[in-house]
Length: 170
Ligand code: OFO
Image (cartoon, rainbow, N blue to C red):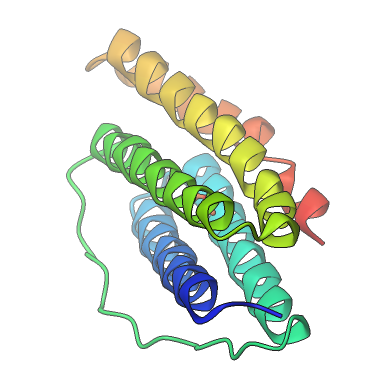
């Protein structure tokens, strides 16, 4: 059975995952409308992946006798300056998500909730992958700078960098 404290922490995490999904969906839509088709593909997949992270939490809370709360979300930005801006935002956002996940893990330990602690380990390793992928893209974009040919190749190659974690989450 979940304690109220852990239930609340997990529900906060649901909100963050839902926000991530919405945010990346807005970025995907912007990229598609700007003709960055590789980036759009990557971001649509990323958005779906965040949704699976959210659902995994919803089901865990309910299975353990708690009540998952599906949150209202504020509208994400609709305009972005560039792919560089998008990947800078993603990296910052994923660093924030990692620190929030660490807080949940801390709460599990102080509550001696080893079942939830074990469940959260999936998120801990997932964040490692998400942060390193976001950093890889930020670094590549910094090298490309304003080079249009480089940007074309970056966008094209993004479709091959689609994270595999969405499969693992199911
Ligand atoms: Fe759910 O991993 Fe990103 O936010």
